[in-house]
Amino acid sequence: KQWYQRRVAITAGHCISEIFRIMKFRTPYSLYCTIDSSKRDTSNVIILPRKTNTFLYIASKLWNSIHKRILNENGEILTTSVSLVKLRCKSIILGSQSINNNNTWTYHNFHIAPHSVTDQTSSSLTHQIADPISIEVAKIF
Image (tube, rainbow, N blue to C red; front, side):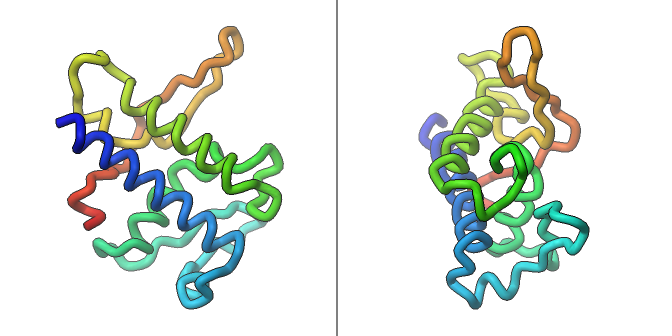
């Protein structure tokens, strides 16, 4: 069961970092042209394509769930480094996987919590499970 859990985290992390690279560097251009970003201010939200089991749909769904937590303070894609996105994405996924008891896995360990709250007293990240987004490997492959 642990190999599956690691695979889920790796796959979600790769989807998020790849969609970020496509949006930042605009390559490959054929994929960049298919991404429909929201025109509201600088929200960086991707308008989801038709629901399918494709990379673009799943990566866009994951991106929309955590993009505000992985970009730099001003929320701009161009000024955020790839390494920062990978680091923050990894910490969010590991945090989601350790929500409950460390010895057992539950339904919530396979989902990325859509919102995080920074605890002002301990500066640690806590997650609120409001509308979790599935990152199952079966849906990606």
